[in-house]
Image 1: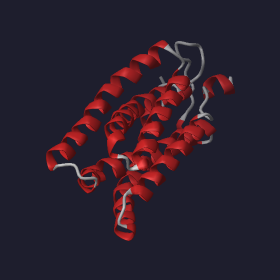
Image 2: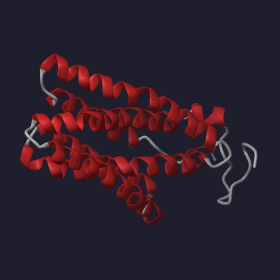
Image 3: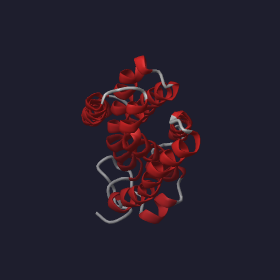
Amino acid sequence: AGAGAATASGLPDLGYGEALRTRTFWALAFVAMTTFFSILASSANLFLHMRDLGFAPQQAGNGLAVMFGLAMVGKFAFGLLGDLFPAKRVFLVNLAIMAAGAAILATMRVDLLWYALVLFGLGWGGLYTMIQLLAVNAFGLSSAGKILGTITLLDATTAGLGIWVAARIFDATGSYKPAFQLIFVLIVLALLAATLVRDERSSQA
């Protein structure tokens, strides 16, 4: 179907140009840019961070496995919840869980680290699923490839930057605490931006 064609719900899809002029597109783009900055900054520096906290190399490797493994679980779990409950509500819960994990990481407490990795990993995995689901719900399928491709392009620029910024912060301060504090702030901002997401097809109709 071309842009503007009626969908199964009876609402017309938005074209690529129309989507770019909506607040929902830029809210989703902002969420993607801030969270993927945070994800790459955390995952790329986690091993060194755990070693600095006194964990053995094997334990630090296990920390990465927990984060990546829970991310896989999060993809399916939040996708399932997105089918059962309003997608926006699930998205906000997703980001809140990730923010909780980031907040615990920023405390630098060794006894709470594993809880942080579980929460952060689950939130990370859910993001991939929920951003795509919300974009399709908001704009329809006609231009979904271009819309999601643009969001992916934007988040890729900040994702790579996250690795470098976190490492530079450590070099300048001798601690990962300021980097994890920055990550927590960015995810909270993403959570606030997510409240602006809406079904643009319904709004324009």
